[in-house]
Length: 109
Image (tube, rainbow, N blue to C red; front, side, top):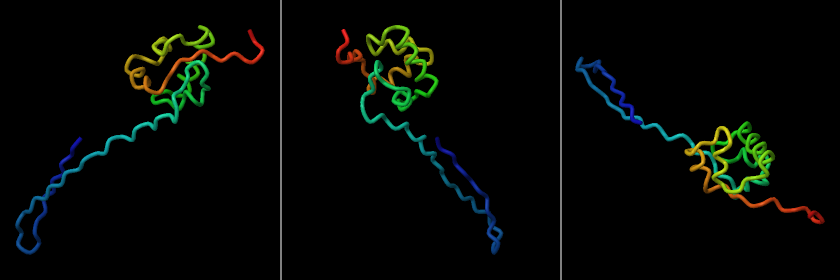
């Protein structure tokens, strides 16, 4: 976004009006830093989910609740079933998320 600032100055010595213009360009807002690694929706903690762009603590908690209630995510698109994650949010998150089944603990069957 550009803002143009015009100032009318008057020369003290000769009383001549002088118009000075300056353009100000706003810097874009800093982008949310991307997570260091791809986040597995089926194993990620609230803290790991909170690092995803556009995901806050409340949404991270809803992701975990969805995972527990539904037995995990079958595909990354299932994330859009979580309240607060729509198509636009999902498209931003897509490069940073994955779905892999939870690894069984040794000795479990």
